[in-house]
Amino acid sequence: MEIDETALNGLIEQSRDTHADALRAAQEPLADMVDLGRQTRAGSGPDPDENRAFAGENRRRLASVAKRAGGLLAATGLIGAIADYIGSPAFAASGTDVQVLQTASSIEVLAVSTYKTALGLPYIGGSSANPVVKAFATTTMGQHADHLAAFQAATKSLGGTEQTKPDPAFVPVVNTAVASITKASPSAGALMVIALALELENIAAETYVNNMSLLSNANAKKVTASIMGVEAQHVSTLLAVQALLKGGDAADITLPPPVAKLPAAAGSVGFPNAFYPTTNAAPASQGAM
Amino acid sequence: MSANEPVSHLSEAELRVMTADLDGIHHDLTMPALKASLAEWTEDIHAQGDAGRDGDAAQRLLFDRRRFLTRAAGTAGGVASVALLAACTSSSSSSSAPASASATASATGSAAAAAGGEGQALSGDLQAVAMAASLENSGVATYMAGIKAATAGKLGTVPPAVVTFAQTAMAQHEDHQKAWNAVLTAAGKQPVTAVDPVLQPTINAAFAKVTTVTGLAELALVVENTAGETYQNALSVIKSPAGIKTAASIQPVEFQHAAILYFVLGKYPVPNAFTSVNLARPVSDYHT
Image 1 (spheres, helix red, strand yellow):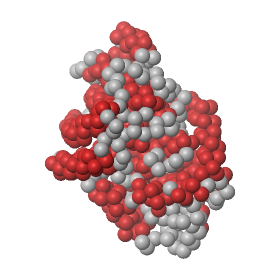
Image 2 (tube, one colour):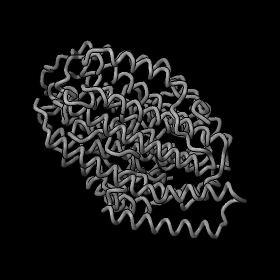
Image 3 (tube, helix red, strand yellow):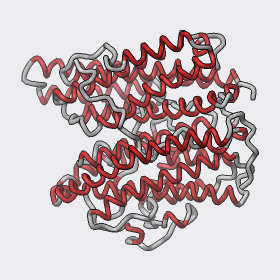
Image 4 (tube, one colour):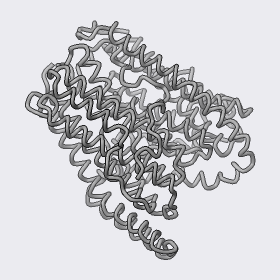
């Protein structure tokens, strides 16, 4: 099947626009959430009247930003959620929650750096790369950077220090895998990259699913809940790509895929569990500072 | 059901081995954990007792219909999504029609308010559970109707991978429904076998216009995103930690279904860095 480069580029561009809009819109309210956390740490907590004024001001600001962006912002889910968080009681500091969020940040740091490394390989991010795989790696790296920013902002809002380092328990695993990948042939290397990405995405998704019952702060829960499904979608996409690569059908990795050509079992390879497991979830304090 | 012969190099046998391995993991690791969560949740619900009723007002506020419709109208979630929600608003006042999930999406029912587990005096977590069960029933009914239409040759040629997708997604929605109903029955309540009485008429209307596999996939995408976003919202409402574990284990799966549907439709499979709650169904979809 021919790859429709024009259509693919259009989709990627659309995704980039949404991504950029989300970041622009998120920066202001997240910065103010950090200010709120700073106030809480400095004294006896924010003044209730100031808090109400803060909430009103940010609602207006969000509405203004959203209007400028032409409604695309809400598609990210972040803006509606942030508007709610601002209207709710201020983040209540919690040692456990900070640790959970720092660990989540450490996983995102590792994910971003791993995709960045992968994109340096010619068969993932170079001229010989499959366009869909390259677009996925690029977009996914950006989405993990967004997740990192959100977890870091939430950490600071709870009075914690933002985690900027990768999860120490997983770094050796990634380093070992990367060392092997660089020595492998393009076809073997591509499969190893997909396997590594799958492992990291599953760890992220399972950790966040597990964190939902560990977090006590309502806003931290909302942030995590809005991210875990996205990691699971990364897993689905990678499982589908992995199945095609293992079957020697790299040419079928297209958007849209040649659905009529695919074997029946391909229809379910992307979502193997009715209930998302948590057996590979990282311990809550593993990436804490 | 008509289907093209697969010509991919990836053999059916190879893929089946891969999926069997994953299925083994599912049964070895996931199900025992789920059962433990459900048992724990049942105990929590018993412990909640009347305290759960005290939280009703606050929970209903979280699901305020006006708020979520306002949000939905401002999203880029798709015309179909907004139309679906708008139609739900208009139907909410007139619909009292829970249909059995086994009766396919074409059924709307008319009078039996207490049929299929609807109409029980539930509150707190149990009302959220009942709403979730009815939403899963709507998911099952949608896929069942789609498979029936495909089998009858009403959707043209249906690729085998699409058939597998529909069958597997439907089976997983059945698993979800069973999980929710296990909580209800353990609490001494009736299982909810009715479809979502507010959402279903709109699904039925949309389904009546489906004539192709693409059209069915578009409708299924809206249903899956609605389910995922409903659970995301429910995570802020459910009080029991065990209940949160259950909802958290289902939300990503619904979004995985959505990812594959996006892909099949030629759209980017992970369109947003953050999932939203714009399409979340309110607990009031379950009529007490």
